[in-house]
Length: 353
Ligand code: NAD
Image (cartoon, rainbow, N blue to C red; front, side, top):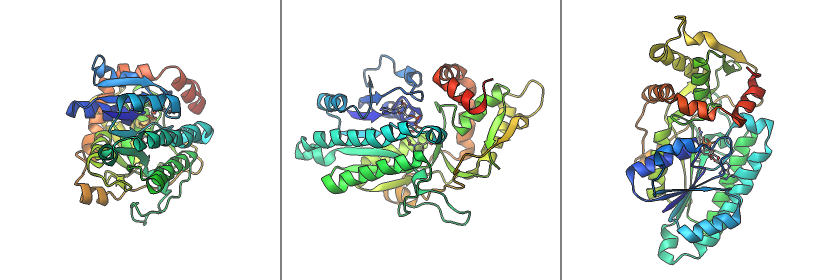
């Protein structure tokens, strides 16, 4: 049994689907179901006794203590977080509450639980904290990619809150001996990605005939990894990572945002052409840049490759094609998540349509 937090979100849902496709080890999914949590992503697991969903907050000590005592998980994978940089700029408080305070409470519950295990269970237990490359700050064009040795220089409330949680996780290993693992991954893309993030937003807006908003000059560079490759990296770190270590995870796919948007347009032109025969790139609209927008992130994933033998299965070209196809084939999911709170947020950002 493993406990996965935030598994109604984008990466967590992909992780649970992948996990249960490869193993019969049950999963408890603890998720608060914020606007980003969507059980529809796990609809294929309905009636599957290996997936136990619990609606709740990682910061709820009573609930987490009870779950740990009841289910005795051998590992915890912590995805639960507020994850959208733009939202963190407009309202940082939820980021501090969940990413910092929530992670702290979760660690306290886990520390107490772990301390009560017998020696063998204690030694094999793992707490894997899922984090981001954004904690390292921004790179100049000529800088080498981030390694695990880079200093933390977070620039947004989101990345600062994730950096704080990474530090807490590290401290629980050094201070209490908790067997923790941390992964710092680059930008993910793929199925079940909430359409406020770059790639799904572009696909959804393009198909709806809406503008494709690109920040500033569109030359912000990110490394992109297909979500299933992130999931395989997490599984690998969980089974073979050294407690106390951090592992950078990336796709060796550095691309400027504008190139990503144009690639999505070209794929849509091929798979679902506009009725008027024009290209989707016509809808690209440059908008005022995000304050403090980091120019470049790049990940050096040598350590996880060398020490644990992990490498991504998809190239950007194969992964983005699968992603566009998935969104075209899963319009019902898109419509379902585009209601309520999401709609209000998007309308506030880009004006009600
Ligand atoms: P997401 O926003 O899609 O999902 C987050 C999930 O956490 C949601 O289901 C939400 O309901 C849940 N949640 C939020 N607050 C909670 C709380 N207090 N208690 C319990 N559940 C709560 O995020 P994602 O993109 O799937 O990212 C998952 C993790 O991976 C995050 O920690 C993020 O920082 C990290 N990460 C994401 C990326 C990326 O590109 N998306 C890259 C690297 C790392």
